[in-house]
Length: 177
Image 1 (cartoon, rainbow, N blue to C red):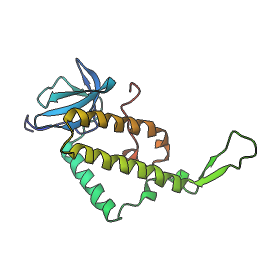
Image 2 (image 1 turned 90 degrees about the horizontal axis):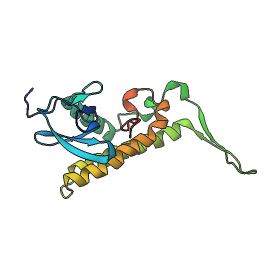
Image 3 (image 1 turned 60 degrees about the vertical axis):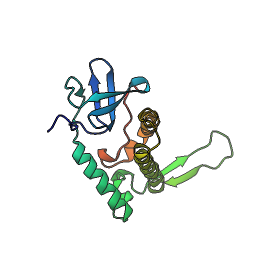
Image 4 (image 1 turned 135 degrees about the vertical axis):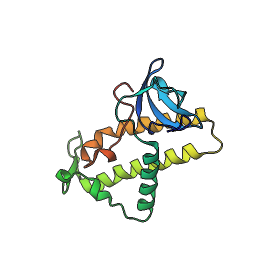
């Protein structure tokens, strides 16, 4: 692959010898935009090979194709949200009990709760896309807002136990976030 093209996918966690651990949040013409601990964003040239991925490097072209397919299938109602719920939770309920005496507990079908979690995930993804494509925000502003979105994903990782596939789960920056 050419040195002017990315070789690491979006969302890949990397280790940089000077800046430490970070996450690839965007691409520019010749550089990755990496969000490092503390919310500091840096541009790292595609040609800089001292920055190593912590796990599978991903594939930028595959990321682009997957996202396009999700959008098309979702727009036409061909993706069934119920299929993402792990089978062990099917038919289950979420019971919410008050700490006060005399307050009735509330039970919510897990399928309904899960659809709401998926809706939050999908809205965060749309917000990410609109943010990255926004013509009036500077790259620094985009990265600042992207950091809030990433931390929101991290806050939602508690619900990953409900997902049948790892690909559907929420991912934050990790333990050092």
